[in-house]
Amino acid sequence: MDIAIIGRHTKVSEDVRDKIFEKMDKIESLATRATRAEVTVVHERNPKLSGDRERVEITLHGKGGVLRAEASADDRLAALERASMRITEQLRRLHDRRAKRHVGKPSLHEVVTDLQAKDDPAVTAGESPIESVEAWEGAPTSATREVAIDGTPIVIRSKTHEAAPMTVAEAIDQMELVGHDFFLFHDADSGLASAVYRRRGWTYGVLHLETAPAEAALESA
Image (cartoon, rainbow, N blue to C red; front, side):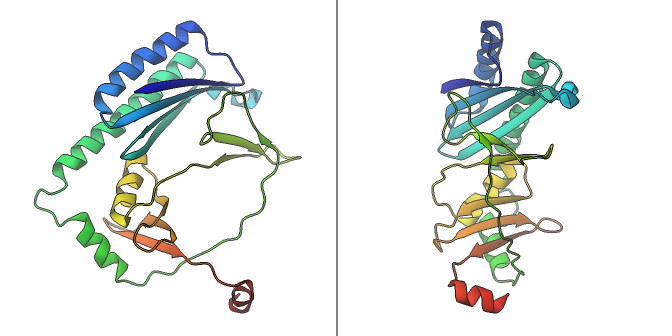
């Protein structure tokens, strides 16, 4: 597994690099499908965030998709320890889910097919253009970026990444891996931009986004 170490607003010392490689050796033994890992060390400049001034983000890339965890602390090594524990826990949960997926339960494909037969309201929202994107040296194409809103203390985290088309079932798996309540993906079956999301109980929903002519969109608004 290739490992890239990136420093944002800071330099990563050799001692910290050694600790990162030590942690990644243990993670690699669990992440058998991962081909690349990115470890980003961030130093927060905002004095109001002194308690979380050091942040470590670990992102694993592989054939199964992307797995990510992060943690913050006032000490860099403490943040690394927490981020390592979180991604290790995600990997263990993934292994458990794969082992138990077909034990006395209907397949995920059957569950998703049933959900797609139900009508769920789709909610769309317009997006405003984002300005003041701060880049940093050595950042990978898919990196998370800090976006400051001019004249305010608000910071938006913007992320762009490439992903191969996948099925709804695979998208739900990825959503569970990252621990989010929704997951954006390109649906391999319909060819549409889509999102899966959690519903109440152990059920899921899926939204598909079709492009409509501007005139039709205005008339339906």
